[in-house]
Length: 124
Image 1 (cartoon, one colour):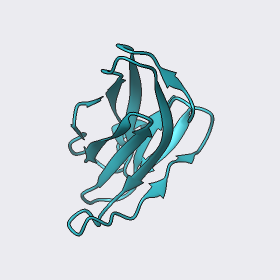
Image 2 (image 1 turned 60 degrees about the horizontal axis):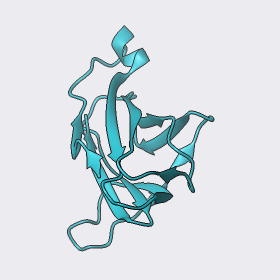
Image 3 (image 1 turned 45 degrees about the vertical axis):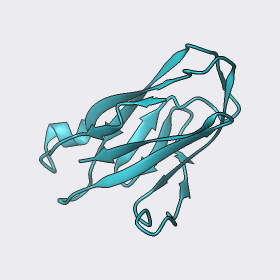
C-alpha cells in the first residue's frame, strides 16, 4: 500500500531560493500482507490512462540516493529492486518537486512488487 494516494506540492516561484531547493514531500510504502513483499520495479507515466495504455518510463537513478520519478519530481533513497518489505513494515520515501519552468506538472509513479502494483499521483 502507498500513502498518500496523491502528493500535491502546490506552487513555487521559479528562480526563488525555494525553487533552488525544491519542495519536499514524502510517501509511505507499507506491506499490509502476511508474507514478505519483494519490490520488482519502478516506473512513471504522464498519460495513456484513459485508453488503458500508459507509456511507462523506467525510473532513472541520478545518484545512489536520487531518482527521477517524473518531470521535475524526484525520490530519495528508493529501496533497490529486489528489496524485501516484511509484513507490517513501512518504508518512508522522501520526495522533492523541483520545477524548471512555469507550468503545471504531474506524474503517476508506480511501484511493482510480487504482491501487485500501487501508485501515487504527483502534482505541482
